[in-house]
Amino acid sequence: MTPQAITSKRDLRKAQPLWAGSPRSSVIARKTPRTRRYDVVIVGAGISGALMANALADGKRSLLVIDRRGPVQGSSLASTAMIQHEIDVPLFELSRIIGKSRAERVWRRSVQAVEGLKTLADGLGISCQFEEKKTLYLAGDAYGARALQEEKEARTEAGLKAHYLDAADLGQSFGIDRRAAIVSDSSASTNPAQMTAGFLRDARKRGCEIVAGVEITDLHAGDEVVLATSTGHLLLARHVIFCTGYEFLKSLANKDHRIISTWAIASRPGLKLPVWLTEFLVWEGADPYLYFRTTPDGRLVAGGEDENSPDAYLSEDKRTAKGRIIAEKVADLLHCAIGTPDYVWSAGFGSTETGLPMIGEVPGLKNVHAVMGYGGNGFTFSKIAAEIIPAMINGRPDPDAALFPFR
Image (cartoon, rainbow, N blue to C red; front, side, top):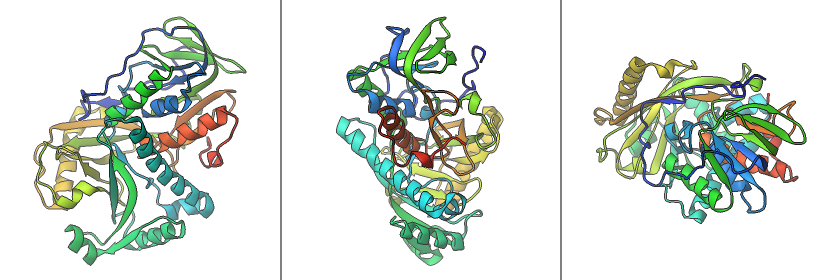
């Protein structure tokens, strides 16, 4: 593999997201590694790398997190941070693709991941605006009332709480004109920059070294993995974990893993919105789907208008147009004025046909692990990955590891 070709290299986002410059989002990082040999090297200092470091930092193993940018400067900063247990592919449909038992296990594990994030953030005392939320999933052009009824039944059979609303109930309780909806628990929202930084700072306290501005340009896998860096040095590691988000490993590029463009907005603070919205995340069974939530200071954060394109988000004209469309769609749905957003940004994200990530040891590369294809569940799947891969490294395989294979 030639230098500069280990992972795809791309601008992960365009324009400043709401979270840029958040207080308590900085992390101290070195310019060069202290040594050349580590037990574990984690490539990527976003939310997946931060959670991975948090899980592996035990004060005993030597641990390095390395990023070509800097901590919290990639895709995590562009997230709307709607931490959902619901994944992009509904449970009833996922059951048809991978089997009922496996699909139910995926969804239950997703619920556990959201709960685990809360427990972890609370336990570490991370101040990141973490709020438990309910989810309102609206019928749309992809999944109508009949599909949502089937979805509600599938979730109930899986032991997941879900309440079905018909058009009359939805209108009465939420003032929304749609044919149906599902209300569920076990979701949350956060400030993604503050949460990511909090996990990295905690890992650093427990001996994890963090290096910024250095790129991994080549590797040789084996009992000890050899990594070449952009500074001309070699690093040795017993295990390497690529947590590079949507800059996926080129050796694993395939038709099942694709980059999609998305857009997001944040309104001015103190917006007059329906009171119930402070307790809910909202998204819809449409293609592309709209999703939104509020922040503690009364902003509306919304996203959508996705395009199956790896670079459409780079267009400034599209960013302006998409931001306007998103604001108009939310205003129409909630019957309120959104106004001109304070922030409009865009990004690319990775997805798969099943909506599931790929987690584990990279095929053909011994002791090289990776996490790819988060879809709309970056924080949730990052938590699952930070349980599966450390268990594998510690010699205690996670029973759900086979649910997220490389395909």
